[in-house]
Structure formats: structure tokens, C-alpha cells
Image 1 (spheres, one colour):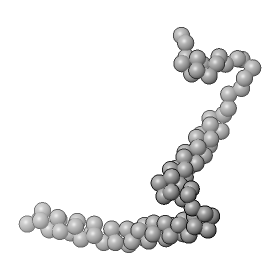
Image 2 (cartoon, one colour):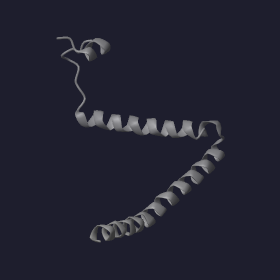
Image 3 (cartoon, one colour):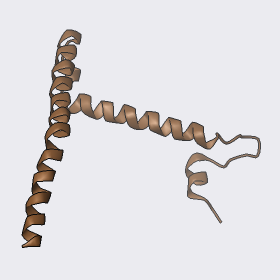
Image 4 (tube, one colour):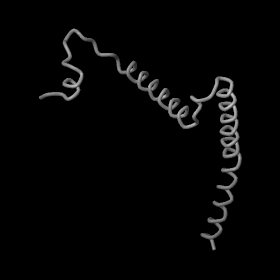
Length: 93
């Protein structure tokens, strides 16, 4: 039976060693993080900016994202509690 990966990459010889699963997992993780950073740079068009403009844009974006996360952390549990009490009150009537 022919393996498609062997055909596309060339046949594996018995002398070639396979990398451990942890190495390939770390490589995939590194590649994924790099890909996400590349997407972020393309979406925000930061590649077109000068280095000091990039730093300013990164600081502003990080500030806005951290404020959104903090606001969600503070207010979402309160709103969920109010909604839970409201629907519980409707069920008990």
C-alpha cells in the first residue's frame, strides 16, 4: 500500500530517524504562533509602519484588548447572575 506522504516527500529510508512526537508538537505550536502573529501583522497593516509607529500601534492595541478583557471579567458574571435570577424567578411563578 502506498502512503501519500511517502510519495510527496520521497521514500523514507531505514537510516532516517523520525523526530519524537514532542519535537513535532513544539514545532507545530511554534509555527501556529508565528502564523497568528503574521496574520495580526497583516490585518493591522503594521508591516507598512516604521518601527516607532509599530510600537505605538502595538501598545494601543494591547491597551484596548486588555481593557476589554478586564471589563468582560468584571461585568459578565454580574450580568449572568442578574439574568439567572430573572429566569429563575419566572420559572418559580
